[in-house]
Image 1 (cartoon, helix red, strand yellow):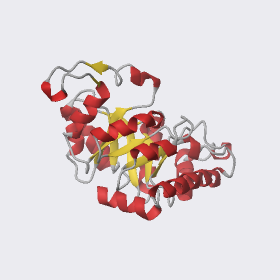
Image 2 (cartoon, rainbow, N blue to C red):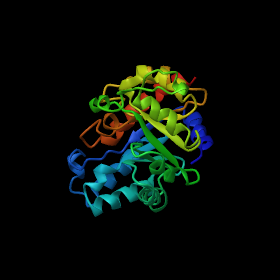
Image 3 (cartoon, rainbow, N blue to C red):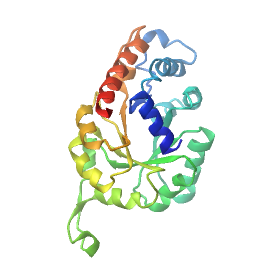
Image 4 (cartoon, rainbow, N blue to C red):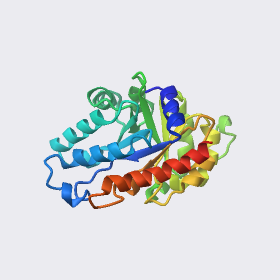
Length: 276
């Protein structure tokens, strides 16, 4: 999917909502537990209930990989079922030496036909570049995450003595944003910025003013959609805000899909106001 196509969907639906299909077999409603293809059936009903309210779906591959072959099959069927106008993200956090990253890219972009994949930049340019070599596909690189452990590395201050940085210290995540943004363009690169770091978005926007940001952490993790939108929105939106548990596990009963739709509708309605 191109940036233009994604923006068109955002404008048409007045939404920048991404629904996270982090489907845990142990958490889906009990009446589906005995279904021969329970995970896919759950996903199918969630997609049917929310597809007109969101512009993207994010599949956290760990929940599917944990089930072995059956999980991979459920993931593949889910990707195939999602409407073509949706932006489909593999939340897989890959990133390895170049030839290995190339195989990961083929797996998720060709075999599974995702539009984007989350990528860890720790190993540097040659680990990220293979994901940028596919037309109309995206690498979504980890920038500033919302987990407690982000303080261990992402928020460490680096001593920079070169003239380009004016001798000032900067956080590791700032170096990542600056460096990685030079490896691709705003047509094939996005960055992950956690919603619980909303106050940092204003500063991040000065570093990467034009790139799309994938923002998890709204909902159960306590992130504020109002704050994320205030600091992160740009002229053509530039945001995909992900909500997973708050939507897909809104109810444990027979009405789970209806309740998921109701929560997604609340997000979409609020987003429409910020876009106007």
